[in-house]
Image (cartoon, rainbow, N blue to C red; front, side):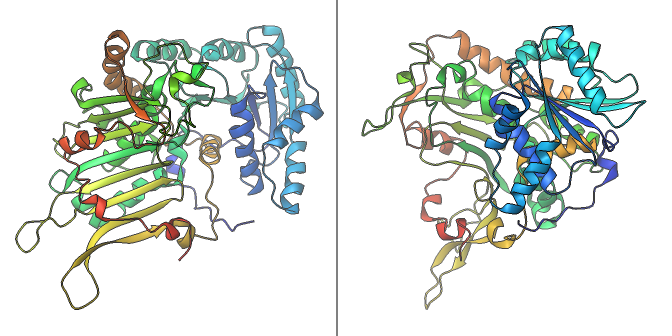
Length: 510
């Protein structure tokens, strides 16, 4: 097992006290893919490192009828145990779990759940419960109402983790929040966007505000553009029917990538407390005008040039003639003193040439004179895979000439922190919820502000049937005019093409 370092917790970051010993975590939707692939592996990861409260109990709840053995078999099938020590830990973890079958719209089912929880709780007079809704948003309100009526502690505390999507536009988001508001207080709600739990995203605050050489140049005087990119190698692979109801903009950009943008662009918070951090994120969002359709390109992948990979419309689950975008590039602006006229370019797509998520901060050209066409400096934050931070810089090529070469100052996590455990995003966020820290969760006004930026564009695309996504080949970089679009918004790729990232280092080797 890899060594791990757990930083001392900052109590000022908490919005609520940590869950005490003998608390209960209830995973609703326990038989679904999200719970099996993300929630339970994350809970086990925390248990491996003794980060769960002492005496914790974990209860699964779903409509699927199964006995205790089947339930635990399902959980364990998605948990990796590379060694005997982990196998022993898994047996201990499974002993903490139990399962209740019931409906999502019947008081009687939730009363059975409440009775089961009460029987395994360690407190006779009070209860401390964390409800994880690994469920579709269509049942959030119904389930919440039944939990509040039947399973809410009469004395103690309750908190609830809610998964995205939080609506599909501003109106539906407000309807969802209005329905949840009488049931849960804002302090009890933890709206999870798993990108905020990723190690490199959590590192942005430290990189920005803990290093003066970054902080001094982090403004419109030095930065030409900021790109935040999400690329996937695969297409919908038979699940296009689900994806088609959202599209790439709703699925990735309005939430994940916009969250990263706020971390990149925000002002220094007064403290690391949850509300101070979220206040600054909201200020960034409120300084952003709605998206101009002229600053958007959308695409939809077609079959690969060799015909081995199908196009999006070849997926039998996709509606015939769908205009759903599988690729988008969107330019946003922030109207404040720091970022005026600096383009923030969000790019996301499926069936592209590589799989990565990164932030690319490109600096302005150096003063001309002794240099001609020297490449721009770039700061790159690789969020996944192979977390790294590197600065592309110009250096003299060793030898008897004054030729320049693009090289890098490189922090690749696999090499620098090879013996440390990098937690999965869900591990980090569930631990935050247990500790009562809202810093990396989405606040209601933050959600509202983000939908205000995107909703006019989404309605414009949905309602104008003559707007059809541009086709791009499966396995390409995206639409063929992408480079021209980026160049029109200040990004220099021609000079960028002189540089190649050393792939052996990206694999953790020297």
